[in-house]
Image (cartoon, rainbow, N blue to C red):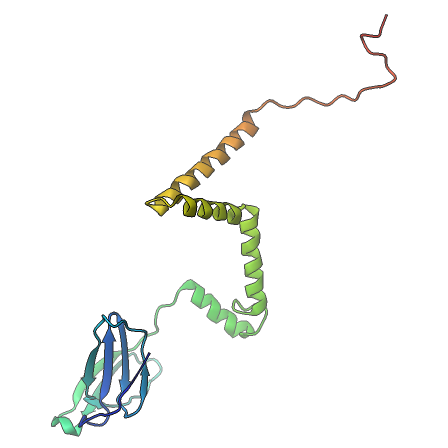
Length: 204
């Protein structure tokens, strides 16, 4: 859905309008006839509107090796503030996961379009094929499909507990088969029958 401000009244220039509905929030500088996109809101959910005035603004340059910055922000004249707002910022590199570091290293080494890059089409295809091969090797897709079909047919009160019990039965059956193969009798060698040799019954 969209919300369009058709009349801004006497709000000062640079005012920020904020729409709140549930856990969704959207902020935008208020402009007449400007549409603001929101997620769908049911008729039973209230929508709160906040107007926020900009106190001031100031820019600063990043200096290599410096991580602390003292900034004085000049106030908006319409607020009647005579002194600037003093603020201090601590700037540092955001922590990244191992996967993100590997991806960044691959981009730097090969480029985003290189086949060895994790996000390249060929690499994604290879990953998908490996995943499918693994699932097929362990017969996961068939067993999960049968499990879901049985669950929909039975419609248990607790579907998660139902799936856990069924998967436990599959594990027990699998271990039982393994024990039978290990503990079973070893088959004897198959002897070839000589058709030319007379049988014991026919011997005199």
